[in-house]
Length: 138
Image 1: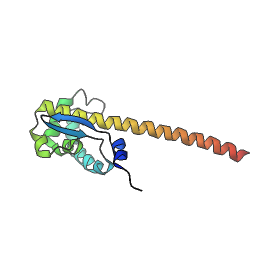
Image 2: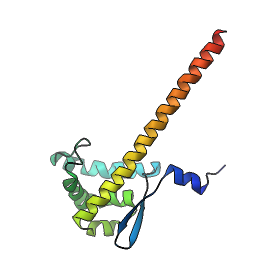
Image 3: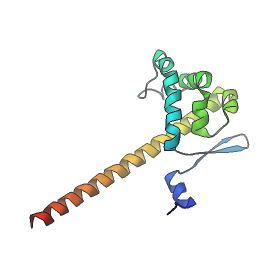
Image 4: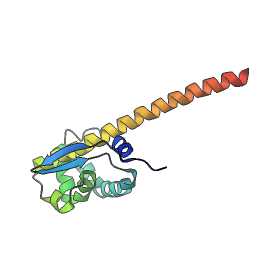
């Protein structure tokens, strides 16, 4: 069986982001894109450390983070946004910062939804275990 278009839309909800007349459809990063993203993040890891940017404080240093990405890994934002790398490199810092935050927010929401669904599944499995145990004890 093949998933329908509507199934994919549920799995990857779109957040629209406008730059001029162009509307980007930001979606959570697909599993197939993760190796490329990890590669780019590894490539700028030292710059992030040197700039004191961490997962915990990136929002406080978002302009610095944006500059690191634009100067050293524009492909990272291109993969996350779907915008051509050559266009990412030319964006004004304010627009690039807004785009980066929108991309991060889409993926953070997706991660939260994933964790919520995983916890719900774990709870169901726990209920199943309790039911199975009680049946086996009879």
